[in-house]
Image (cartoon, rainbow, N blue to C red; front, side, top):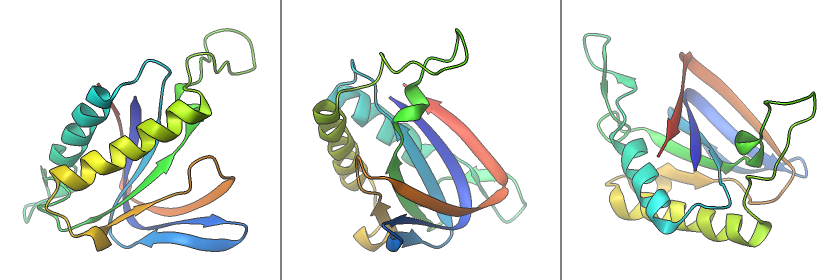
Length: 149
């Protein structure tokens, strides 16, 4: 399981030209799910994400996690994060989860985030798994990190 977290001023997801989710300041997590991922991976990545200090404190240092910063979180599935790009000019997706397993793990990850956080449900938004989504964001910083477990 791979997460690409971006600190954002705002972010939204649209499907069929209709905004289905949006957040103000917080984090946009693009989530890649691999075939071997388990609920344990979802639990560990959720813990890492929620404790990851990428928001500035009063002194301008990255000392705050998303809860301490009172940010929002937008979680979007992105299977291309698990692509193998080592050989040739075309990405390979053999490490990626099947649609069914990916959906199960995506939902497990969202459930873990909701269980582990003190953020209100209104601060947690999601994309639509398997849909052709358009993601809009304003990266704050820019600040972007890859999270793996």
